[in-house]
Length: 184
Image (cartoon, rainbow, N blue to C red; front, side, top):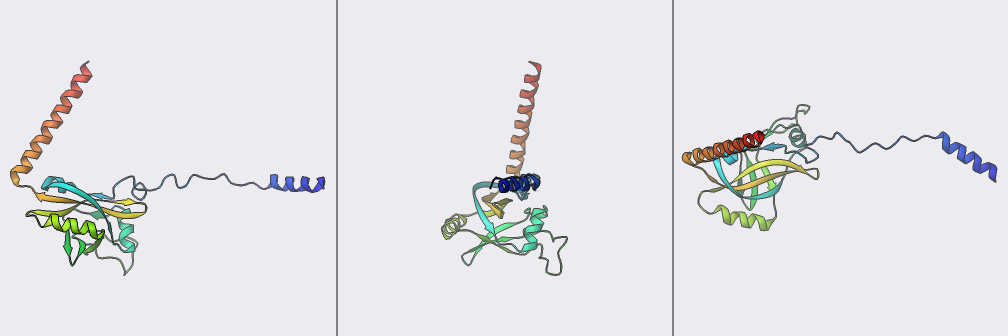
């Protein structure tokens, strides 16, 4: 019996296993959810943003691949409630470069996935004068594409100038503080 254990041990020592690699260390930060797929910069400039909420989005296969490659743009898009469903209009998701004849249409209307209770709340808020739904960012969460929407009210021209003035003042104040600290 001792001879067989010796043979088993010698076989085990001959068989080498590869050390386990960490799971995908250089995974795409967009797909991993560490970075936004797209961000609507114009939204905060053109609107007063208030309530934010998250919604899923119904996409086709090539659209998801395009979002992963950063081909999405939310600049002129907006949300709309129609027939008790929430829709995203004018969101541009560029065509997938390796797609075929079944590639998606870039600016098609896409359905947003929210719960009925959230939809009722939004319907009530949107009935107030001047409010609309503006998508602020698109990102991945647990492998699924999500859209962050904000309840928004349009800014007038003088509001935009006032916001720009405040931003400039804050920037100058931070620069002055930094300069003061560097002298000390």
